[in-house]
Every structure is written in C-alpha cells, then in structure tokens.
Image (cartoon, rainbow, N blue to C red; front, side, top):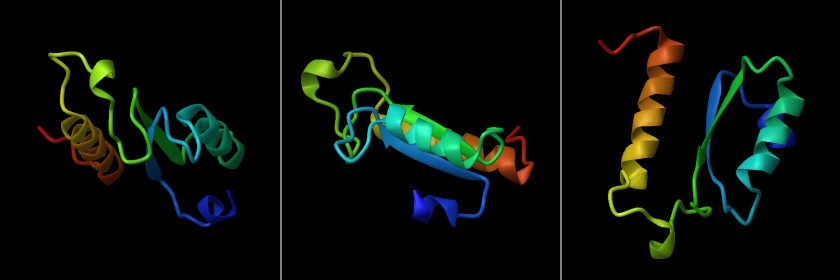
Length: 88
C-alpha cells in the first residue's frame, strides 16, 4: 500500500481475480483507501486469472477473447481516456 501511495495518478492496475498476492477485491479495497473519490485509480480485474494472468483451461470459454487481447484493449482505452485522445 505504501508503494502505491507514491504512484502519481492517474494509474491503471490490471489484476487477476485469483492472484495469490491479492485478489482483485483486496486490491480494489486498497485503491479505495488511497482514492476515496475514485478519480485517480482504475482497476481492471481479469476474471479467472492468476498473478501471471494465466487462466486454467477448465475456466475458459471456447469463444473467449484471449486474456492478452482483453488486457491490451483495456490499457489502450485507459491511455486514450487519460491522454484526451478519443481513438476515433
């Protein structure tokens, strides 16, 4: 938490829901504590993913978007939003 408090915002945290170092629910609570208004931090929780964003085969839908693509799209959207570029 002390390290996160030093990060200038805005910032995006991409977190696997099954991360052994802290689930996305735990990280969301930490971020709310650092930014009660919710203007500085954004959180992208990756369903079923662990710390390395691996998703067990049994937890994947056959037609699911690859996790790297999902993360890339979310990061790109965040950068567009904070930079004021609409992407269109």
